[in-house]
Image (cartoon, rainbow, N blue to C red):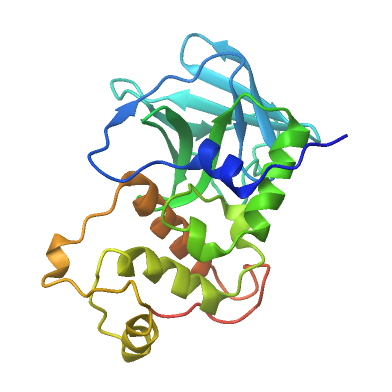
Length: 237
């Protein structure tokens, strides 16, 4: 019988606490498993001490090459059919960063300008448990998870662009960010917890919050018809 995780159990697995947090580089190892919200990837081999070969369900393959002289930095390499995209919309040569923060390890696929567009969480769970955790995340109130849980792109697929904009800006609002857009000012001024900061330069995000902001923005600004929830034009900041 499949085990259904409670929200508290999910948060225990995925949460990174605010405060003074350290971000350190990590090395991918043979046998590691990464969940991206859709596929459970397993590291089957490390070739020549710097190429990471990963497989996922449905005969999916992902090859990463470690960037020389940059700890925790990889890039997507061609494997098999060069036209295959193992990660949605990611292209060959795009950077993959391995982050370790307070014991939570994850990969971040970044676009050429640096914004996160995909995340992959290191896990010891099997595929069934990963799917159960994903379902729990999907059912959770987004306001309860957007600031303290590392999100993944499949989680964002069923959310409209308008809602994505609110999610992205709520991360900032929780730190008192003062918005220029009137609709955002009006929306967050009604929240009991919103306390505008004296200076936006004082607003600091931890690595989880920053990754979530970038991840949401990447999904929000896809071209028309590419975001599964709707085919409208991307919303403006």
